[in-house]
Amino acid sequence: MKKLNLIVLASGGGTNLQAIIDNIEAGKLNAQIKAVISNNSKAGALERARNHNIPAIHLSHKQFVTPEEFDEKLLSILRENETDLVILAGYMKILSPTVIRQYKNRILNIHPALLPSFGGASMYGIHVHEAVINSGVKVTGVTVHLVDEVYDHGAIIVQKCVPVLNDDTPETLQQRVLPHEHELYSKAIQLLAEGKVEIKENKAYIRE
Ligand code: GAR
Image 1 (cartoon, rainbow, N blue to C red):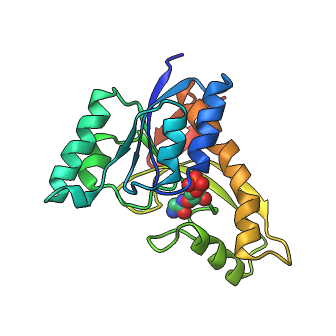
Image 2 (cartoon, rainbow, N blue to C red):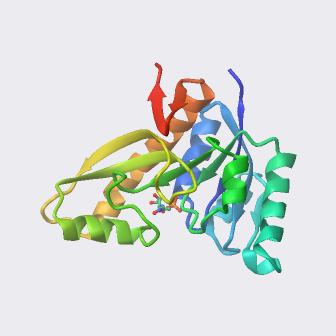
């Protein structure tokens, strides 16, 4: 089984990144994180990377004159690190079609709800949980999916349900969903590492 080279892109605190680091260090995940990239120089995710001697790179569109130059830099980092999988872990920027096409079926995202419900450009972080509570649904959950050119649309690799309780607030729900994200993201990466995921017509089939 090939050890996967991962590049993690994250904008925030990086608890999903941390779970992946912990699972790799515990020998539960056959992968190595070659670098963590953030658009936000103050992201906790960069700090977490440094704490584990993983290269931490601040890369923002603001550092470049054109979006194409940003893409070139990002793609060069991905190439130099012989990246097998790009892991979006709370990355609040949209990747360009150029990057997505070059890494087709090799970019994963985690979403804190059951897609295709509660997805879309305005659905990130706490906003997702607010929308879930406001809708009155009784179950929510976690989705790990491949990234394609349509937002929150690519093939779903794994999902997990989490009940919505009567007295939940967006914050309590977020806190209850998060540990499931941590577990599910590594599970999805490991399934890919083991070659157990087959993609056909925008659907993922798990062959255990
Ligand atoms: C996670 O809950 C992740 O699912 C969400 O951002 C959070 C990042 O937390 N992503 C989205 O909402 C994407 N639409 P973290 O920085 O602690 O991993």
